[in-house]
Image 1 (spheres, helix red, strand yellow):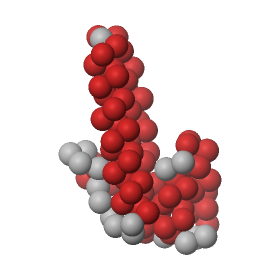
Image 2: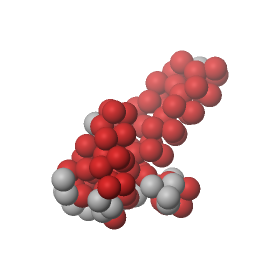
Image 3: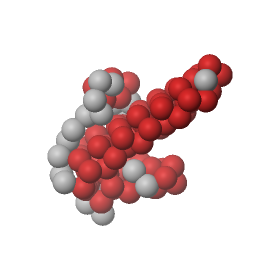
Length: 101
């Protein structure tokens, strides 16, 4: 499986992300690694943000959910078009924090 296919697979549910991670560990591809890190960051940001904001307001949590959905779509479209685009604002941190993946 090539890097682009692994990068796209990583965006399709948590199971797809785990499969892409395992496949990428066997045959490392920098493009796939980039998107595995990006999507892990998007998932964590979505989960933590939603947990925190749902305590404050359901409206704020829904808005955060839409923001995360847009970040996911941007990341997926970039993977499909063979471009390495970081998630706006926080994508550079994902690359630093998860550089071991």
